[in-house]
Amino acid sequence: MKKVTLLLSALFMVAIVNAQTNKEEVDLMQAAFGMEKKAMVEEFVKVDVAQKTAFWQLYDEYETARKELGKERINLLEQYAKNYDKLTIEFADDWTSKVIDLGKKTDALLITYYNKIKKATNPVVALQFYQLEGYILSGIRLSVLEDLPLPELK
Image (cartoon, rainbow, N blue to C red; front, side):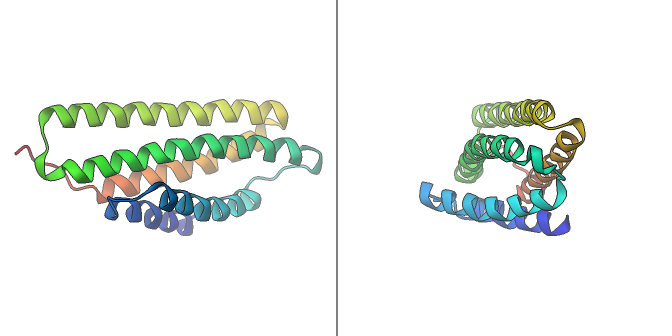
């Protein structure tokens, strides 16, 4: 799992450092991460042969939605980087509200797909999916928070 955390850190730090990230670069980063992540899911989540098609269809749907939320996260990080030196009370409040809302959306997406996977496969497969995704999401959040400088009001 340490490999996962390092990979996540590297991907999201590239996004922060490169505040001028464009859509194609984000798509490329997400595609590279997506392939690595899918291999980890295949290794960690034990799906019966009869349930594989249903699981992977739901997983692909989840990943599509998760990637959109990831783009929002990168956009917010870019906004933070651009405004860090001229931080205002208004920006801080607005930005933090958006981050909180994005966290809620991400958590809601995970819960939705846990329930869908549980129904299409079984509770053990759904739990494995939930645990792995929760671990990855927590790793991303921790990595981002560790590397964001604490702002001072100017």
